[in-house]
Length: 165
Image (cartoon, rainbow, N blue to C red; front, side, top):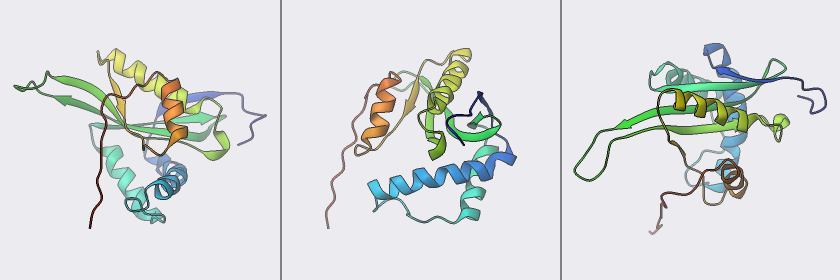
């Protein structure tokens, strides 16, 4: 993907034909996660296994994928889930979209791909009367945190971990 020749950026629902591209783009994020959290993430994944996993998620009704294309080539994807919780004695019912993954091809970075993907699912959430878009990012991933902050995401929960033998 050439930064100088891109003329169009569009977002559309993903289908099974997009699984290989999603898996390819995911490799970059997987490697980053393995660098940031090597005790949790595998540095090397099996391409067939990853494709089968994404295909299963794509077919699950609560999970949705969108792909961003630049000049007809897939440049990024977002995987999100519509979550609804019931009223409990402790909490009010909640409806939200939870972003499991958002990833952009290395060659397409800093071209508005991730922003376009987020705008797309935000518009879909609004159309369904949902007013929350939620995601998690690693405490050590400063680049992602800066991007999400620029997109008006704000911390609302802090997760702590203690490692011991």
